[in-house]
Image (cartoon, rainbow, N blue to C red; front, side, top):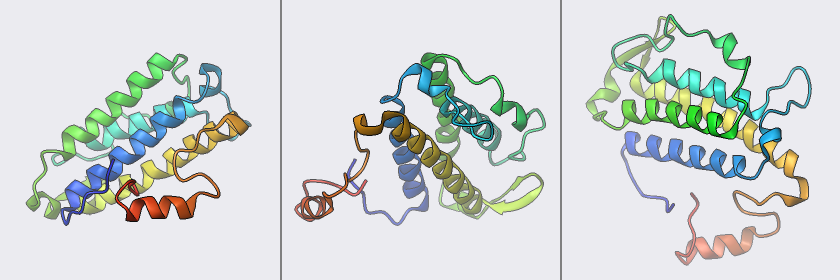
Length: 182
């Protein structure tokens, strides 16, 4: 996807979210079903657990985004790390549902909505602050998923960005309009 010049915070935020969603989907496509649920040690999460947590967070944060607290009373965050999806199909369905909450909440926003106040756990945030908070949170977890996938694939990993030793060529292609930074 080509980087689009914009001065719209909403457009740019949506583009960043779509970038990270796609990045994780390309990483997940490279691992086996068994690797989706593999934990490296007792204090770590599997890819499936991270996906379940992200989906739970997305449901809570983006449902009735402008009108209710982003930490819904029925959310049990701790349970998001238990009993992760056991099949790829289940995991991807959960993943898609979480992103649908986000896109349905953000796509209709206006520039004026960026000035509105929302709450998360009772703390006031501007809409922009709430979005920034989730951009940071999701990119953190997306990085974890990519790192795990890369670890599992070792030498069979297909780079999701600029492969080692190919930065100069990539920079030339971006300048020539043949590639994009996104």
